[in-house]
Length: 145
Image (tube, rainbow, N blue to C red; front, side):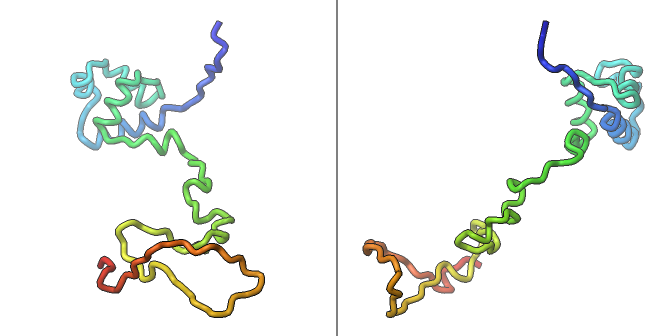
């Protein structure tokens, strides 16, 4: 015997109602739809009004034909966590940019980097060996509009 959990308690009625609403908005009867998709009007009625589960093939055909978005029915209460809005993560203030707006590729920025040169170095500062690197400072003309 199959030991998987086959309890599936999903109410298809709201999706069926959305299909019916969009079908009726297009002025199409169940009989007309029946002639297009090859299912009896009674079968269509049971999907629209009684929450009967259609086959996956028919399901895709109906939601595509009537432009029904199923996300709101399948995920009525989306789980919002930090992966959706990382800027709300409590540790974002500890990052180098301190929670500034995210960089958007292709959009101009006013400052690429800020350098501070000071001749006084604190005694407890960690000195790093010099690295041979070249930097190109951008002028206002180099920034995209």
